[in-house]
Length: 76
Length: 216
Ligand SMILES: [Zn+2]
Image (cartoon, rainbow over all chains, first blue to last red):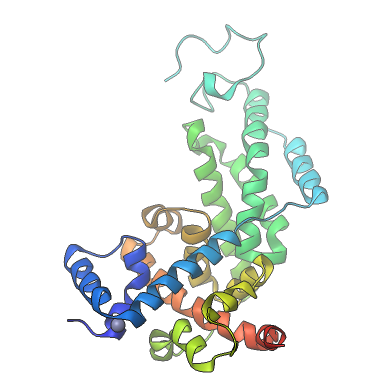
């Protein structure tokens, strides 16, 4: 069985579906037996969600106006 | 390919879906107008990406991108590829801005970073002694603006792949194309970037007193 630190190192890749079949098997075998790493996994998922939620950015009206003006001013 | 002639429907308004190629059968003025339509639609998204990559330089970076894209309009063969094409130009404009400002990648001891686990750090430091969900409580202290500030603490090398993959939903393969780097390189930067992000989440929380406020 792989160690906790080996499992933890690959958790994000695991969540992203970026690990190979063999790694997948060893991580899941580890998670089935290790509560702390399950906690780590759950947290990695939440952290990813935190990043995703911070992605929404409002464009200030003035910025949008200036950028639109830039487009209007383009001359072939 | 374009079917029929571009001149048949002169009277009808320009509709992007009608024609799949820019730069063919159009006068320069028509091309410019089509570009304006394409780009205007993308402005909020472009600004959002730039905001996360270069913070307060976002507007300038989008300006750079619009001018550069317009100059290179001939590269765009398929209008449906316009959003990805504009994003790719923008990312590179953002990187240029970062470089000319002389921002250097921070010195990082990667062995420390590799070993760092925010999950364990929170459990060990126990900033919310009366909570039974301290990990979630920790994350809830961060506003979207805080999270973006944490990202700005990372060097561009790691920030760009993190933002593109986890916030903008690009595939690793697409990021590799945009940055003209092998997929393996992008994967390695994502791996380190995530660890750095965890580390900076903690240091940002302590620097800004997020944990003290919460414990009160
Ligand atoms: Zn474990």
